[in-house]
Every structure is written in C-alpha cells, then in structure tokens.
Image (cartoon, rainbow, N blue to C red; front, side):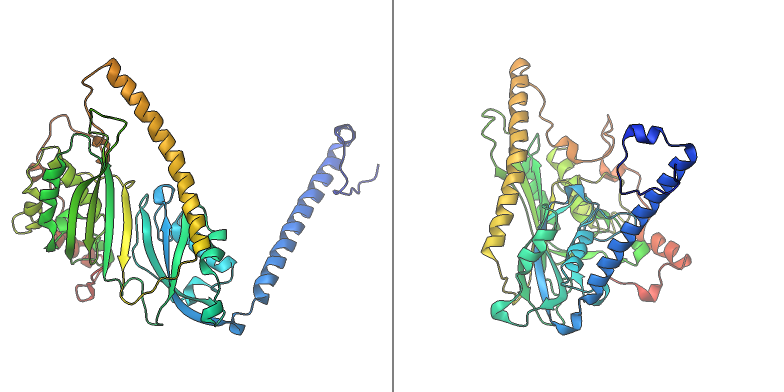
Length: 407
C-alpha cells in the first residue's frame, strides 16, 4: 500500500483498521499540516482584508457614544490583561471589526466612569474619533453598526458629535448612581434621613477603598444629592412589605473606588438599627475617625451608573435601533421576572406552612461572614492610616509626594 494519502478523502473505519502504525502516523501528520495551512490561509486573508482598508481615504469625526450594559457577567468595564471578559474589550472588538477605528491607541478615547466587576450602567458615555461619511445628513448609522457586533447585554443607545477636545471623563458635569435592594427588615425612612449627611463636600476616605498605590491621596468629593426610597411595591405579597424594592440614588461630581458600595454597607447597618444614623457623620469626620473601621462591602449586583450629565450634547437616537434595544431588554426582563414570580409563589407557600418566617431579604447585600455578636463600627479594628499608606508607597517608589493626583 502506498505511503501517500490524500487527507481530503474520507476513510471508513474499516479502511483505517487496515493501515499500519506508520501509515496512520503519516496520515495524522498530513491532516495536521492541512489544518495548519488552512488556518494560515485564513489569517493571511484576514490580514490582507485589514490592510486593504485605507483609513486615510475616509473622513473622521470626534463623537460621544451613550451605551448601556448589564455588567453581572463581566469583570468590569475597563480592559484587563488577564481576561477578555470586560465591556471595553467587547467595545473595541466591535469598533475595529467594523473599521470605525484603526486602533484604540489612535482613537483619542476617553470613558466617563470605570465601573467595577458586576456593576451595570444605563448611561455610560465614551468619546473617541471614528470613521465618518463626512455628511451630517447621511452619516453612518453608528448604533446599528455596533449593536450588530456587540453582545446582547451591551447596547449603544445614542451618539452625538462633539468638539475635538471633548473628553467623556473630564467634561462630565455630574454622575448619578442607583442601587436597588429589597426592603426586608430595613427602616427605609431612617436610611433616607441618614444619607443626607453625605450631601456636600466631605473627605470620604472612610467610605471608599483607598487607591494610594495608584497615586490617589485626595478623598474629598462633592455629593449633589442623595435619597433612599421605596421604588416598587410587590403586590404578590399583600401582608409582607419585605419584598418591596427600594432604591438609593446618589448624584455627585465624581466618585472614589467602591465609594457607593461602602456607603450602602453602612446604610444597611443603620437600616437594621445596628448603627445610629449619626455613624455617617462620625466616619466623615477624619479628626474624630482618622482610620477606616473594618467592614464588608455591599454587593456589586444592584449598582448601576444610571446617568452621566453633560452640557451642550444633543444625543442622536435611531428609533429602529432603540426599538431593538427595547426588545432585547424586554426579553431579559421577562426571563428574570418569570424566575422572580416563581420564587415569590414558593416563598408564599412556605410562609403559609410556617407563619412568622423572618424577613431577611436584604441581609445578603453585605458580603463576608456574619458575626453572631454584632460589634459596632467604631469599636472594630481599623485599617492603616492614609498618611502611613502614602509613606509606604513613597518609600517603594510607586508614588512621589510632588506627583500626587486626584482620581
């Protein structure tokens, strides 16, 4: 039998059984070589197509995109070296695939906010320079183009032309976050009274995660408004209000790392009557409380960057694309509401079997192991002071005292 085989010819199992060991090895090698050649041809073809797109032949314009995303299944908004599961990775994959940009490095890119793992957004804004038709009356349908390539849980909902020096980050006037949570056994009115203490300009070093290693050493932020209220009544439960949904809304000029989740964590302790509402004032007084007490973060799941406010931006909305976005969200809503309704009926049946079940719907919001005996925040061990952290990272050469920046 000849040692030369055509790997394109399919062999039956019986034919393969007749081959010797050496013949089988040769056949496997030829199949491997064919596979490599096919991959190389495809790569060469793709590279050739990419090279053939001459960006110099097209107009360019600086624009802003408004987008929403469900961040529950992502590792955060910003690109990371150790994972592709980020919002930015998907955005730039789509932007380069449809040749709206040549690369991120030359796109003059800025983002309004850097949301963390699990955090969603209804109104994230990015700005960058993209390919254009050069005609305002017949411009590219940016929303439609990108939404065809993006995952269903990331949608572009509007765009706007902006000046060349516009930055989605530095030109943002205010950012509004919302945090939804079940009422459970929480005193919502008390929480709303307490949250008013953070309005105004304060040092939030005890209500954030201090990012000193990256040069962030100033923690004064201005909060424009804050409110806690019941947002929707769950009519499946006529006797129990623990299943009602509540929302915290905070508007500020800028925010620190984990600032909202730290605030929510303390608010929940207030709502559970474990802490007095004055605890927020104490934590904001860095002379009285110079070091942050140890406490767990609130969950990332309910947090949403809900609004980014700018001056002189007229958002352009494509009604067809927005209809598609609405249909997509309706599918997500229906899927999750079916699950929620099913769980509600099960919980109702359990309460009928055993009346007086405790209402702990909001307990899961605070992460970490729960202590059997509650220890007040101001009596807990405290983290290292800001001054010591600055000294530590200065000695290591990671920051310089004359290079301190505000994030």
